[in-house]
Image (cartoon, rainbow, N blue to C red; front, side, top):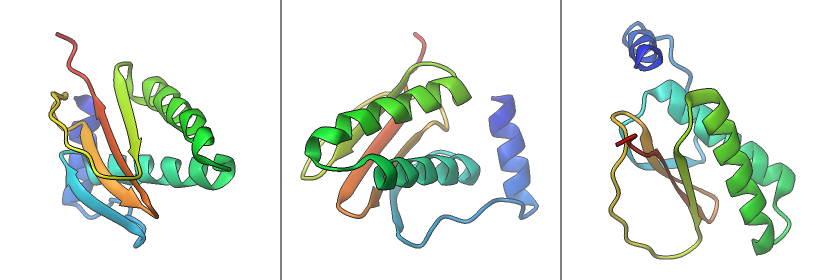
Length: 113
């Protein structure tokens, strides 16, 4: 939560980065810094590694590994290219649902208990 507090302090004084205009946020409880970090890493990996639908699993695994290493374990990553419904629990301030290109992403950190 210390990192989250610092992110929110930066937002309050206008030091937050900006989301790319090609990202649509549907739902989030994250600081803007994390939103930008996660959407940027998704775009970067998609642009580098996407060749066909089978390559999505590599991208999912790489994003999870990145988030686990940077923000702590227990991250869940869903990349969807159609309709879906969901209900999940997440750590406070650690969930995001966004769209880039044809892909909808749902990413969250699971509660410890």
